[in-house]
Length: 274
Image (cartoon, rainbow, N blue to C red; front, side, top):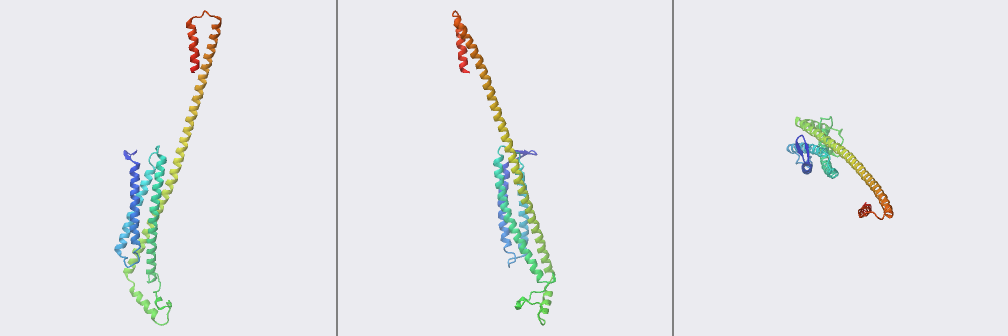
């Protein structure tokens, strides 16, 4: 559990928040897809498009919040569980990325439908300087002989109203918003890619430091063991030399006291234990 600015930052809290947000993004993407499927059909209404815009705003806001949570999760202080946390974070990033891929796919589909609608309305009106669609007669020639083309053109001119222009403007505004939302998701993808790269560098650095420290400890233990063996060996040699000297004197002085004999035996026993 980490602390920042006097507040407790529990990795588990971040994890649960991110998982919950990913589930919400997935659910809202499904709802948006259902609305997109109705665009350009008899069910396409102003209310439906307003609902689409609202859901788009909500899910994009949620995606940005999740992006910030993932960043905060990755910036928590390094602990002994760093390797496990990296695995967990990579899994969250993968799930988050998959949810964003589906969301962006739906956004692109909505933008394409809106562009197709605007193009169709423009082609059927004088807004783009085009001609009316007269292909119903079979030849599709706008320069028909007689007055048929002229009559249809005049009828089309009468059909162009401020309502049509307003409708086109609304659709173009919706397209710009969708393109902005798609760009926002692209930025989140860049953030996720950078986080994966930076996290990998941190883990590699930590592991390298741990391995180096472990190597130093092992070398130090080995050196201490060698020093201890060397010291014990020197003591053993000294005791053996003293004992041999005492034994030598014992051969020539049979009148040595019992205490002297006891000291010799003690030195021999000590030498054997070392």
